[in-house]
Length: 157
Image (cartoon, rainbow, N blue to C red; front, side, top):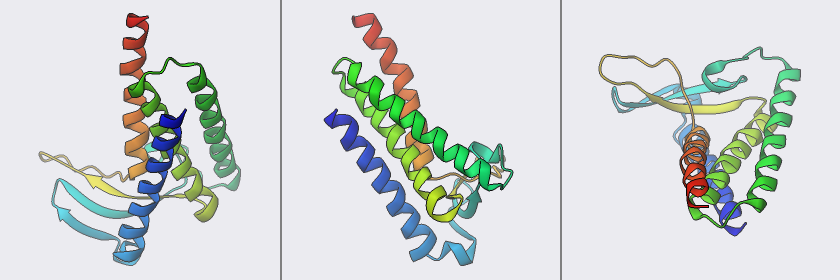
């Protein structure tokens, strides 16, 4: 469980640090947009009250607390599941990344009422209107790792 806890703490910390630096220290909250490596990477300020890509973005307080509760239940379930897993570093690391990323977004919802987003990536003539954050990257990477490593653990066992 040490791998899970360490990965979760690092993912949470890096997410919150990135949000503080970009949104507050670099003043994205007032600038609204900073070109970093256009068009590939830009910082654009976003407040997401829904889930990925603004889905279920009703802006209601009930939805906020439902998403917080659901995220906490998923984190608890992953923690319990991780205790039963074989000691596979990649699988445990993936669980920790999902938990840390989810808790980073939960923290935002509790403190601000929405998730702070700032990363925007576009490429090859495609303009992506959506923004995301470092927590979302960790959640995605962790989920991909769960799929990849869980199948390998089953084959090895």
